[in-house]
Amino acid sequence: MAPVTEPIETVEWQGKQVPVWPMRTIDYGLLLSQDPAEVEKVVAACLEDGYFQLDLDGIDGRRMLEDRQAVLNLMDRFFSAPLEAKNEYGLIDSHLGYEPLGSRTGAFGAGTKDGYEMLKVSRDEIQQGSPRVPSPIKNSGDLHILEQAIGSCNTVTKVILSALSSGMNLTGTERFEKSHRNDRPSTTTLSMMHYLPAEVTGQDKIGHQKHTDISSLTLLFSDQWGLQIRPPGECGAREMGFVAPKKGCAFVHVGDSLRFASGMKFQSCIHRVVPFNPSEHRYSIAYFLRAEDDTMFMDSEGRYVTAKDWHDEKFKAFTDPPVWQAMAPKSMILGGMVEDGADDPEPVAPFVPAVAKQTAIEV
Image (cartoon, rainbow, N blue to C red; front, side, top):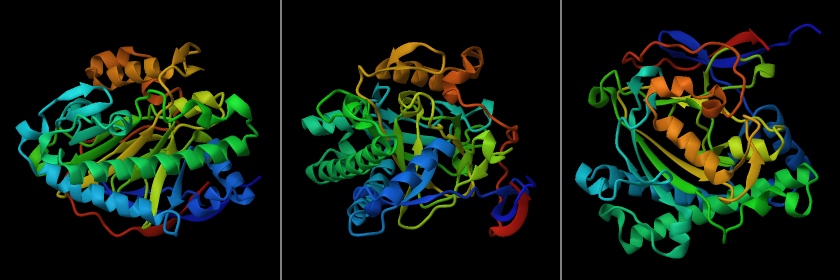
């Protein structure tokens, strides 16, 4: 069959035109109602792509959008605080606490560090009413904002899990949500990330390295460009391309744990973050829904491991020096996903990106 030529959006970055990869948009209201066509659509997105946009701009999803805005306001206050206050507890555990700028490998591998600072709040601690959060946001108002946001994110991601279980004809204890119960310990986390401008970080602290997420599902909010994905090889992708922010939507992608739980049927999303506009402060919110700590599955190395063991091993790989990362199995950072094509290894030079335009490629 001859290749189909269809228009695809591109955007100028690093002096060249880079794809803006298209993707399905799933209607949250229809998914909540278990609409058969929408369930089929979200299952196809996870089987074929590993990601989709989730339209929350309806009566059932607008509360989530309001909670997101409240968290963004909280983040502005928190990240403006002195470093000593933000780092009051440090990184308490791998899924909990504050990570300062440059804690991990950057977007362009060895020789670069990450270009963001991050605060992670544990869902378990919020639910138990004893969250360890730094003093700038440890007040009843901000704790209420965090509780509301985590509750909304939890509901949204559980609706997706339920739809996927139904669409995959899973029953009883095989249903995905049965290993994501609210009363069982997990490393589920609300993470708030602040990417700093290049004039602050310099050229050696850039973005966020290429990886797949540890989580079952990631619910990601950002109004700013910078997220890049690499679609699975069967989609014809040979380079990283951008995700266009979409008003009223969250970007959802499958992580390692759900891929493992699906028997490797679902795709995990290979992604990274780069400075699209190096002069701006970039903010994003990610809810990492993770399986219960003692959930067992076969990982990408063919081992039977618990969700907690996989989380801890992969987090260590994220924070290891590049030389140690190179010695670890490639399946650790990418969750066993196979790539198609090479990355652009060059550091980002400051520039003002051009307006996206239409071009044609073969798919």
